[in-house]
Amino acid sequence: MNQKKLGVLGGMGPAATSLFFDRVIENTVAGKDQDHIDMVILNHATIPDRTRAILEDNKEPFLEAVKKDFELFEVAGVDNIAIPCNTSHYYFDEMQAMTNIKIINMIEETANYIRSNYGPDAKVGILATDGTINTGIYQDELHKYNMKAHIPDVHGQKQVMQTIYDFKADKPINIPEFERIIQNMLATEDCDCVILGCTELSCIEIGANLLPYCVDAMQVLVNRAITYSGKELKNQAVCSKLPIGKY
Image (cartoon, rainbow, N blue to C red; front, side, top):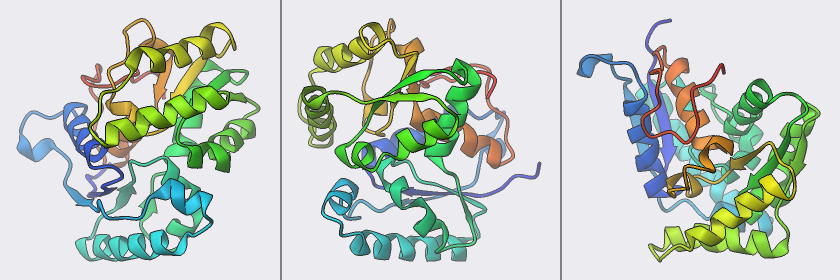
């Protein structure tokens, strides 16, 4: 496969975009600078809040903002676009309709990864923003493959959102409490794995005992962005929260 240029629509949030960039570099087989992927990264931090757009049913400001970004990508000649933000994928079809450039669907790719690595009968926990949970984008994608989806209870979801927004605000994070939510999904709810379905959650250090059961949607996007760009994945993903696996 010939090397292709990757566009990254970032800023949702900036730390997650930085982590995505680092992981692409660290997970690409390269012996010199020229072996890495050409990327055009737009850290569009002022994009309107995705969860608020969904909950308030006010999508126009968000879509108007990203439309201009797609136009920049077209001028730059990118071949594929990665958007390291789960919640924004609620508008995936509308975003894809704005551009002829392929947008890598993180939700779809994550569901495919789980089906391949945990089996078609997997029960899957979902940790994500209120916007992602309420739209059901992960639930719907998992159900397409007849997998079961499980979301936190009201208290658990409130803690997930607190974790996400504390990270965005650079406040202390209650990692033990967040890990208890994962542990509950695995031990009490009998989930086979848990999706880290918000890119802020990808930035949090989770205990080694839980990592084998966490499917980091950002890492799935990293892996697919590398292969779609015509590059080879390393055998060991240096900063990943999940193995390359057979996906």
